[in-house]
Image 1 (cartoon, rainbow, N blue to C red):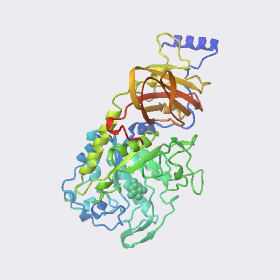
Image 2: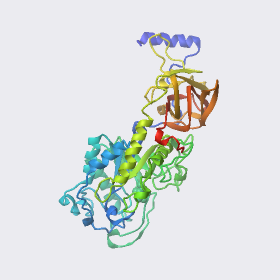
Image 3: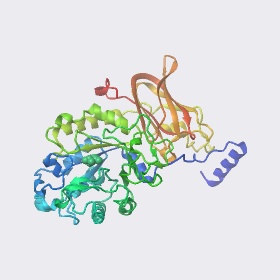
Length: 503
Ligand code: FUL
């Protein structure tokens, strides 16, 4: 639109007293650009692999011999390709777990991969994963455990510079990272250079989180930082990958000693992680981590514990479907490869996901709404808040109402009768969590029947109900803190293989 037309529109709107053509103001905390990209990533994997894989432990003591690490067939490409087929869009490698063994040739400690026989002591597993992720188009992230049961200095002030130097190496040598993971397990017994004792640290102060996080901000400005209580994403508070029935991306972390100054590990209220806080102070969405098998590391007898594709789908609905991300732990075996049992589960799950979202029955629907935000009124300018915006694939184009309207309906008339059992809703989260209550109705036997209802929508709300057949559906916004800005109203059918299985 040229500027004189725009001005004319503004003036005529003013004259009519109805002008709300400007974008709705954001409500409450909103995501930054890194967090938006994180939301779009939705599914990624956390890779645990190292000396524990060979000692059959979950938490190595820190005294393990690097000579144990010599996988002849290791192939990061095989792992990353399996993740990709399994529907994962990112991979986070545990570069150092609590046992302190570094999977890259660090200068900070001798307890690293160069002391192993693998690749003649010239190997760099972080490099191989970074390269494989790039090749297969997955985003890459790293986890470097703050707790280090090998390091003699752990528990004294001399350890922090070592840890920070490890982070600097990892954050400057392996390309762009989308996420840096700070684990909450900290302090306890360990080898500690031969001392073999218990060392406790003050979780609030020991790691100097403001400056340690500052290293990430400086070296990887586009990475999100994960910790128990932020700063960018919060832990879901369980290792089942399961957020609360109503989950909010907003959260107000509380510090133990100073509620106004939370710090990682000082996770007084991580118990509130599954639900978050409506109107929480920060946009700190929920990351739902869960291992594919019982343990995070591979163990010889845990094949029977591999989660079934149906269970993985439940996890997806309880994480991505609650506005968070699903972080699925995958553990390469002693060959450094994803084993057959895990491949089978990942392959089926990935296919189910692709099948589920292959057809959106709402795509070519006619969308009408009880209220539509007043937009520019020139004939050649489509209203940017039109109902049809809830049907395209953009997360940021949206249907909105005028500021004063917080109860409204969006009705879809489908091109044909469809049989569906999954509804997907999204708000344009650039404008915050606005909706507090909604219902979905389906037109059946000449009347509207309530199909589902809930409170939170946010980045993504997936609802799985009984199979119904209809050509008309309706979203009712029953309560909102600011005018609704709905970017998606989609309808899908669960693949036949999962038809009978309700979460
Ligand atoms: C936990 C760790 O203690 C586990 O070993 C694993 O790394 C998991 C992802 O986080 O806190």
